Amino acid sequence: MMSTNGSCVMTQFCQFRALLTCMGVFGVAAVASAQDAETTASVYVWGTNIDESLQQAGEVEVDNSTVFENLDFAIMGELLHRRDDWLYGLDLVYADIGKDVSASVPVQDPQSGGVSAVDADIDFSTNTTIVHGSIGYRWFDDAALELYTTGGIRYTRFDSELKGEIEATGAAYKTKDTENLTDITIGIRGKYRLDPNWSFPFLADVGTGGSEVSWQAFAAVSYETGPHMFSGGYRYMQWRLDDDSDLLDEVTYDGPVLSYSYHF
Image 1: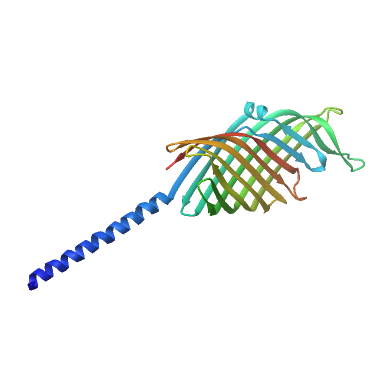
Image 2 (image 1 turned 180 degrees about the horizontal axis):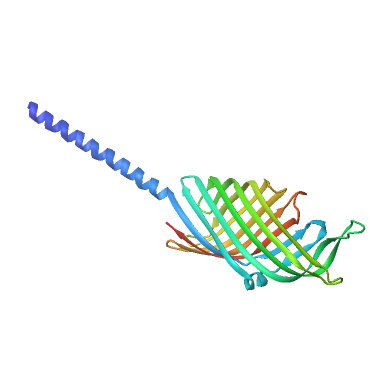
């Protein structure tokens, strides 16, 4: 027959073993939770063409080679945080561009009051700020394909200035405009995996609110090695402004993208 002391020792041993078992379970759960959380920081270069359609049918076009030649300052980056099935994103673009271009601009006839587009030599400058915060939920994930539905808020600010001389008459022309647009966005984001290293990331969204409509689409090829990822693709963004805009009617940014990302 076991003594009282022996019974106590046995009980304490069982309790200690149960405690270790619980600690092991919680430890595995903590490791799994840590593995499910990941943050990705990206910096990228966007070789964008700029097409700004003006009210009253004028238009200014600047190709990507001109943008690089006349880029005064730019910041472009993205921060993504994944936890379980949730995705939190922040995209930032700021660009300051100036260039002398030949463009068609709207001019009002002081006598008739009519507006017509005329050719002019224009000193064109634009500052663009884009801040897009979003939240996504992963609703499909297998060995090859990952899909998120996203919703967010995109803030865009266009500071544009046109000044120059109308070729036909020699008359001076100058106009400035600032547009602040805040759009609610919905979209989809994901990637198709070829193998552990190669994948095709993509996204698309559409928004409205401050603008009549805005939308973007992006697709790329990515190569991952350890915490590093290198991508090359194409991005298209467009804003269609409402009639309250004094200068801009439609703005399009599109061109190739090269990016570097780090996972941690």
